[in-house]
Amino acid sequence: MLVMPAAEAQHDETNEEAMELADIFVSNYDSLLNSYVLSKYAASTRRHRANINTDYAFDQIPDSVLAKRLYRMHTVIPMTYNNIVRSYIRMYLNKMRSRLDVMLTLSEYYHPLFEEALSRYNVPEELKYLTIVESAMNPTLTSRAGAAGLWQFMYTTGKNYGLEVNSVVDERRDAYKSTDAAAHYLRDLYNVFGDWQLAIAAYNCGPGNINKAIVRSGGKRNFWEIYPYLPRETRGYIPAFIAATYIMNYYPEHGLHPKRVTIPLRTDTIMVERNMLFHYVSKHLEIDEEELRTLNPQYRTGLIPGESGSYPLCIPTDKMSDLIKKAEVIFKDSEDSLSRKPQTVEVEQAPQPVVQRQRHRSESKPMYHKVRKGETLSSIAKKNGTTVKKLKKLNNLRSDKIKHGTRLKVR
Image (cartoon, rainbow, N blue to C red):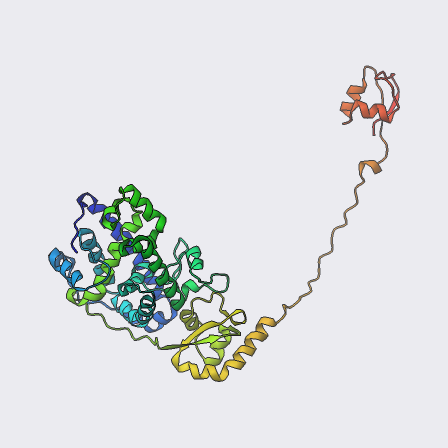
């Protein structure tokens, strides 16, 4: 589908938005490379340079060729082509040229999971590419806004879709549960708007912002017609999704020949119904604790709180038989550690300084004042921080008159 919006005046702004998204993608990807598994097994990704065409070569490709390639994908979601989408394809070609090997390897790991969940909710399969835009397929990512995981759920939305989020567990980082929640959410958004591009845009900025844009556009219900009224980030979200989908399917046509990264992603999952600590799983199964955290990013503290429910533990397949054999000792060590009472340490206190108790005014000795010539009750009261009324009461005086030389009680 070829759509050429009247966006010539927006060309510079589109390029700026594309570059901002490119910076976010690179940042998310770099964070992914710092994960234990990739930093250990995918060091070659830092050296890899694909043999690709230059930007100049891409710029020589006619619009009709790119539009035809998108059309040939036969997707449920319209793969609209226009000058904005072209800018994002160009951007992704640049940014993914040395990163595509990791994206393709992680796709082999995650896409079967994504496809199963998307199919269960009758959601288009091509939405699996949305995680490239959202998180660069980084399950441990937390954005500055607080969104977390592969699908970048915010706290409230995650909770609304059944994801447990607390100090110990954050299921927004659980690949299985967050994917199920994302598929469910996307299906609900489609039921609201009846359009997949609007549903995806609403996934990014919330249904409220889409409804506002629809109203401001005069009731239009097409993404490209409400495009100028959308938040800046969301304007680039659909073009970025289309571009990522294009690159993941047509990279060979642009001279990209990535090497698959050898990562030991063969894993099994077992449900745990007793408390278990990563420390003892690591110790008894001889798995690096950081690898456990990478495979199970939903556990924030290294504790699987099995006593409060059934929770998954993902480990390398070749360690599963050892886990079954040593489960009891792992549970016992974990329970002993968790039930251990905090140690009480007595500390000798320094001697406290002796502070003499101050007397209250009612306990202090009475004070007197000898009346001098020219003084009045008012001036004496002011001088001694009291009132005429109190002075008269202390001295049983019936009038304000006082004689020179009289001894008055002032306190």
